[in-house]
Length: 187
Image 1 (tube, rainbow, N blue to C red):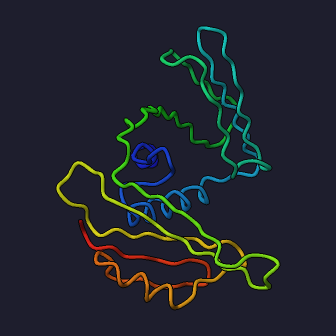
Image 2: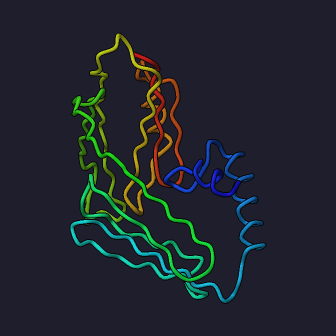
């Protein structure tokens, strides 16, 4: 049953859903408590025909730690042998890294700053002008959320919200401690 359960585990340690993960990890924890022996020390050796040889030793000091090793020859034939006593889980994960094609993005965004008053003035102010447009392939976008993070020490003024709301496509705007969040309707 444990062998079947661990075969259902994904490469990230989870199972089909959050609920499945909780139930499976509870079951594996109980199994671990029942089969635990302080004297166990399995040694797992992974080899291939091209001379690769890596040894994983599981003992009382590292039994709860993940040990992993990248395999050099993919595809390749690998052998796993276990000596000693105890219980250990060996898992092989193959991931394909296929970069997503560059579509150029669905939005164009540019920002321009203009000094209103700068040092030596005691409270420097800047005006920030954002220009954005939908450039995607669909007829219209969904709602767009733009979050403008402010530099440390700067705050947005309430009058900024009033100015933003005069723009036809803006549905809502709000100021947080460190940012301005703008909600634009679909275009």
